[in-house]
Length: 452
Image (cartoon, rainbow, N blue to C red; front, side, top):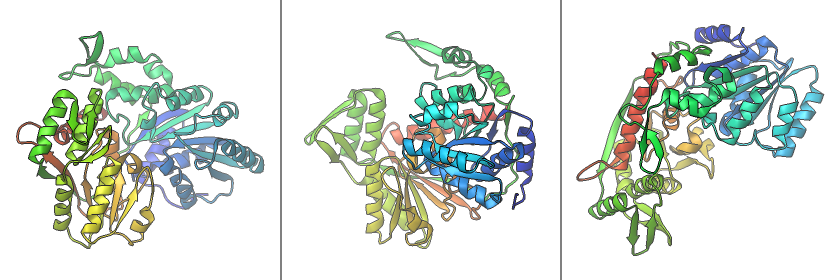
């Protein structure tokens, strides 16, 4: 029995999905997409449902279910924190114990494809599979994407949920729809890429996207996407959001290192050798250099404190009574941020791949929350803060978009301000500026496809 009333856009979405056995829900964080799918499960009376989502989002499902429903005929089981053998044993136990109930199993993307759970899920007879934050399966060759494609062929009802279906490019939709319904975009990724992307030949026999005109047939892509997708109009008046650059100049010596590393891909320091190896590694090293350090064959070498000093200057300009969220990409950045916070006489908490002490921030024991973007861009509500600071950024558009929605979402009742700490060269653009440009241009592309 439901205990809360649906919003108008939730009712519209539910009506869209009720007669369908597959579909995609595109809606932003904080708009109640979990509730929509919970209602779909209960209205359709699915006996055995699997929900797959990022690990931090797994705990949201039981919370939301218990908020909206009395568990009279439904049971929800989160197995994300268990070992492989225990996952299977707990599911078997629940199926036996609650044989007269409808069971919802929640598990994370990182482990759903691993044995022995993989083999068990293929045979257990699922009625429905829901991929929450489905952009996590956008890479066609990944093990999780391939497994869910196989699982999708054996399950009669399949649904996707995400606010960023085209996380990095229009090509991201292929693997998600291969799970949803392979007839829509086919099962040959090479053919799909030829249909929707413009490629040029480069020396060595390789192909790359034409930067000036990378994609084609986007009207058709949009039409096929929305043949089974629903994107509700959400009438929620969020406060204004503002983006402010916070610039600093790279020190002279750092700029010299930067130019040499960009040109040669190799940099020899007294403390060791920096060897990038390939273009992606060069980008990584340049971003680390602008943060004032470089990994060498002899260990991490401190270069300067310019970014850290810029961050401290920014912090001093903001009201001390305000809670802050600081996003960063690398663990050394997180260490520098937390050190700077201590030097400013404040206390911080952390969400990263190594620890989660955010409970102290939520309870008010600390005023600054430092978030590693890869670990804290989904499934959390950070509306306690109205100020967000990007110390360093990811170039992954979906992570960037999701991280912003941690603050600027329903529940935020004050204007939200994002500061972007950006290193500057005397001539030319830094990697900070290039990432900013890339995120901005991809944003425009994605929005154009979704609103054709």
